[in-house]
Image (cartoon, rainbow, N blue to C red; front, top):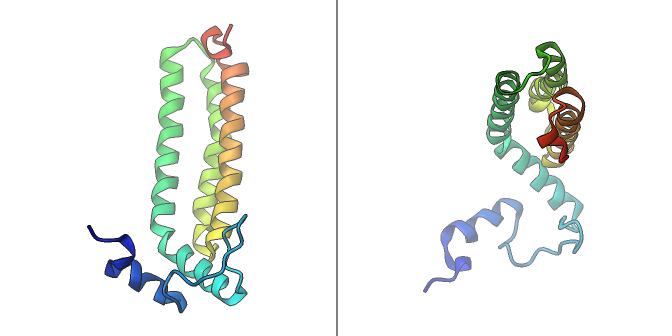
Amino acid sequence: MTDQHDTPEVRDEPERYGGDGLDFDRDRLTLRFEDPDLEKAFQLDFGSRMLLQHRVGLGLGLGLWITAGFLLVLMYEIDPVAIGLAITVPLAFLIGELAIVDRLETWDSQQVVNGIVNLVGGLSMIFVATRVANVPELLGT
């Protein structure tokens, strides 16, 4: 059985940052490299490599929010204007993130902006369930 550290992919990848993948000192809590130059190189590289996945995820998020808005209006007797307004907020944040994602160079900056957008989406879901939909099944009563 082959150890995962013996495969060329695992051995070659860390060379991008100047090591073999086993000798990097990392912070135990944040998992950041203790060498600031190495951390910066990793952040820039990983941010650029994950950009496509980031865009695809944002596109899927847009589609899911739009679909959810239509389904809620079709499934429950709720005001379509109210649900439209409630769904417009996370859509606006997603579109805003799509507009700036190319300017976010590091993986950290992409994750911070994505976290904010997810927080807004979660708050919007709570608002829809408790105020707009007013459906007892959603409220747990």
